[in-house]
Image (tube, rainbow, N blue to C red; front, side):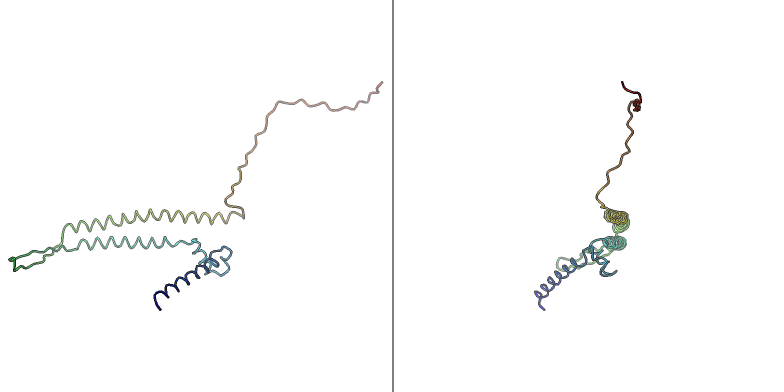
Length: 183
């Protein structure tokens, strides 16, 4: 197949896969419709399952190992310099190699400061990710305890009314029927 055909086929299949994903995996009503495996796809495509923390942890280990091994190999890097002997038309170059004290200091510095700097940078990045994961966990707990009520509405606080104090009122005289004859 030519490159144009494969590119067109790739675009068409990607569009079809996108439509299938939007129709079947994104709606909340379809979460448990397809079973446990497809429920995981629903969570993945709705970003309820985060994988970036695992990727960053792997990158942290890689960067730390690179600092340690790079510093170690820097210590044993050989410095090469050339000397030229002879006349202008008959020259010979000799290579001389030696370990350098500068390389030892640089290597130890890379082995010590490299992992510390890498750790600080990755901790700052992970703070944001841990914050998002905690917010997701709080939302899950709020969904369990909401009992179908809206999560965005808050009830008005109820205040206990203080009793109203007023001046004492004299009781009214009871109506006594008048049994006396009238003249």
